[in-house]
Every structure is written in structure tokens, then in C-alpha cells.
Image 1 (cartoon, rainbow, N blue to C red):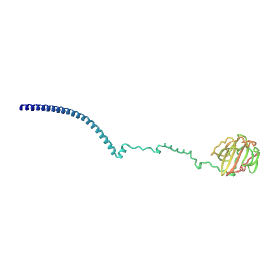
Image 2 (spheres, rainbow, N blue to C red; image 1 turned 60 degrees about the horizontal axis):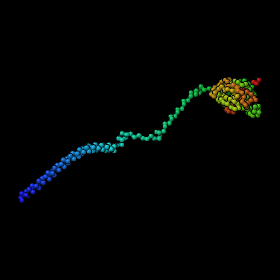
Image 3 (cartoon, rainbow, N blue to C red; image 1 turned 90 degrees about the vertical axis):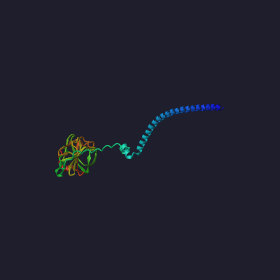
Image 4 (cartoon, helix red, strand yellow; image 1 turned 180 degrees about the vertical axis):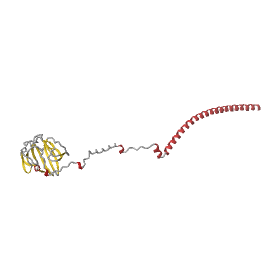
Length: 260
């Protein structure tokens, strides 16, 4: 009976030893697998760690850049990137054209001492201006008959008969004042004799003088033209009018002439 008990105990112990050995083998196998898994995990962690380190480094650099940008002073910002202001309205307008400089005046007038002057004196008289007789006298105190107009009216001038193309001369030293045209007396020239005296020559074909010209007595002023429609009946004639301070006077008071 004792022997049977020992055998039983031995059998149980063997079973336990076998089970323990089996368990230990299982634990060893699990440990080996665990080590393999750990190595795999460690390898995976190394790869992951490398990627994380790179990512972390990039993030850190980005943060540093952002922080530096925030901490940058306005002066540094202006120094790095100068601000370009929008052009003002005045800047956008096209520049105005520069003002033109006034043209330089023509030659300065001659000195006073060199300017020709005229000084008509009544006692000196007038030179007869054209070869011809008076066909109508000066008359401001009574009317005279005008054949072409067939009417009586006052006459502020004298009419000297002539021929077309006949020369007409200055009756005294004079300065040409006006050269113009009038419906009644045609082309005309007004001469300034000085001291308020003026002579007007009408019915001229081609005045040969210009305003400002100085003429000595006897110098040609122009030639006689065909009469205007106001003097057709009277025929070709020199219209000669004399004034003193603008008022008409009789030129025959200053000249002698002889009728044929």
C-alpha cells in the first residue's frame, strides 16, 4: 500500500514536472516572440522617431520664423521692405506743358535823336501834289454841287483833276500815318505833317508807302486811279483833304496854284 502511494505520488510529480516544463517552454517561446516583437517595435519606433524628429525640426524652424517676424520692429520691416505709397492724384496727372517764353522783341526802336520828326509851319506852305487844276473846292460853310451824286453837300476836301497813272507827291515833309481803303475815296494815304496838321490823299491806284515811312516834300506817294462810283462824272481826280487837330481846313490856304 505504501508502495502504491509512492508510485502515485511519483506519477503526479512527473505530470507536474511535464506540465511545468511545457509551461516554461511556452513562456520561453512567448518571451522570444515578445523579444522579436520588441525588436520590430523598436525598429518601427526608430523609423517613426526619425520622421518625428524631422517634422519637429521643421515645425520648430517655422515657429522660429513666425516668432522672428512678430518680434521684428517696424524700423526693421521698413528697412527690409520699403513701402511704396500709392501715387497721389497730382502725381498721376500728366505734367503740364511748360509755358512758352515770350518771343524776344524785334529790334529796339531807334534812339529819340535818330527818329525823324516833322514840324509843319503854315508860313512854309505846301508843294502842289499833282499836275492838274482844282475841279471842286473845299466848302464847309456852304454846300456845293456833286455831279455824280446829283446833290448839294459840304465838301471837306478839294478835287484836283488828273489822269489815271499820274504820279502823286508829298506836299510837305511828312511821316506816313495810315494806308487804307475807303468806299468813297478808294485807296488812300494819310500823312502826318507835324504840329497837328495832316493830309489825306484819296483815289490812289497803288500806294507806294507804308505806315511809319518818312517822306520829304516832293517824294512820290503813289499814282492816280480811276475814280470810284461817287466821282464817275467828275472823272479821274486826286482827293486832297487837310486837317488841323482833326478838323478839316482848306489846303488852298497854304498853296498857290495856277489854272490853265
